[in-house]
Image 1 (cartoon, helix red, strand yellow):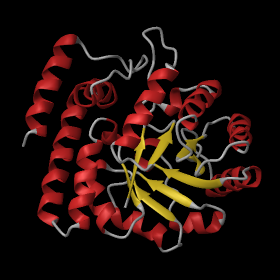
Image 2 (tube, rainbow, N blue to C red):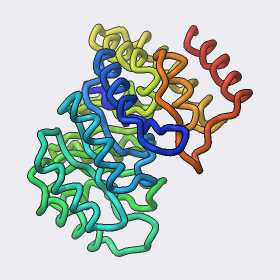
Image 3 (cartoon, helix red, strand yellow):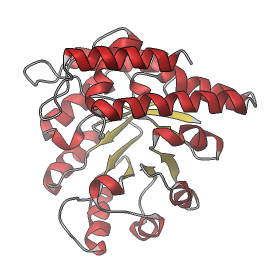
Length: 281
């Protein structure tokens, strides 16, 4: 039952990565029971980062822990390959990539894309599957055809879809916050939770309750997590995560970066007030 957190990318007010805040955040999450750090994912605004910025996020994280999944995906394959080669010099769990998005391309191109990454990587290669965001669903049949994928993060409300990857004998995580408990209880390797940036304690409570056979407590905490996530979605999910890390973890992770704008003072205050009420349930 591994807890994986796709960390936010802490920016300064002028849009630069604050590496000190990255390290502080990673150190805290590990102390709170998080097992693996996922770098440059959607929560980390990965598609909006340059190759240099992705390296900076990786470097700051790997200074703290080698329990890292390094998301290297890009529409520019040469850039992706540069990041894969860079990761080859480090000890980490895996590199990961979403499929090429935006463009309409045939299935065989997607298969070749991942085979090319595998051919250059001395680390394990994971699939980051997020169909609603990328417009591409690299399902278990495609993973079998690719033949070199060692793990998958499937951000998908269809849990049966996620389970199919497990049939292949690879590391399998569901990336939907609403399915954190289900992921831990069902025999998957764990959950990938963006809400874990600000609520690692709740994820740990779910895990410990399941280990102790207290399903009722696990369900209660799962609903707290769902309510918190739904609250963030009403005001701007990614911007809200920055606010709630400060509210519940007690330190700043800086700012998001435009066009993911910071919340207004009024929105921030209302968000925090409502979130505190939900947490106390």
